[in-house]
Image (cartoon, rainbow, N blue to C red; front, side, top):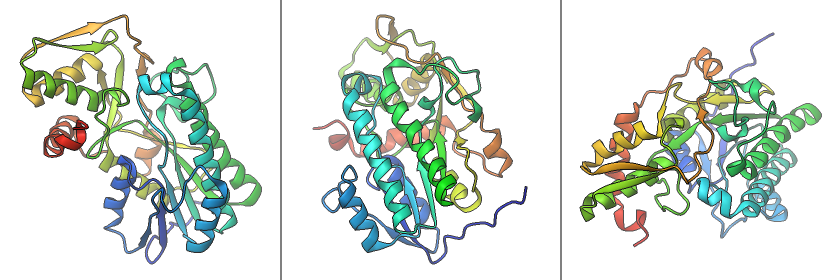
Length: 320
């Protein structure tokens, strides 16, 4: 099979949908190193859930390349409490953007999925071929179903219309601009917020949801953005491709790392009455590695950087 020609971003109009989110803002930072014109649009300009708004904006601005990190996101609690919102919002966002990109003649589009698309008990590490081979994790199935639909939509437009639309599946991401709200955040920022609050209050202990035994993989969002730009330039296939660090650790081990970084001296206790979620989610990143990309930011280095960011933005991060 002949390798497709590299896609050059130089001189292109590049639209980042969801530019205010953690991933979108990281893509903006990464694109500063490219000679391209970056296009963005806030919700006041275009509501991505409304087809007419998206098509009108796309027709007017005519981007040549599109990144789609835009999504309604959250952790186990948010997924469980807002299933309709997670399914509807994400279906509408991706469908509207992909359809409008085709109508506007976009040259290349990269859709961003999530590792939760894989079955709850998928063989580890999870390869791209594991998709749709078993039941999903119930606590985040709404988000997962929407993301699977996005992958299939990109594949369908590629097959029917010849669009160069691709999909990347990142592992658990963290970084500057993360969500630290304990009601809707993912585990790593939640641990940072909990440990910091416990240290400030002199609390004797911090409680983890679940048993602490599930294993998770984490990737710094700036590494993810670099991988996405790399794929935009070099990848042009129907199958989605995993993006991750290739290593994982238990939630208990993560909590101990965060405790050390924050400087909290109290005890870590678990609450087995709360859900664990998927037992393990480690991505098989061999396809990405074979394309010449590897993560560069270690978890220890990344958590220290994010904790500094959190402290610098504490009034915003804590909602005060």
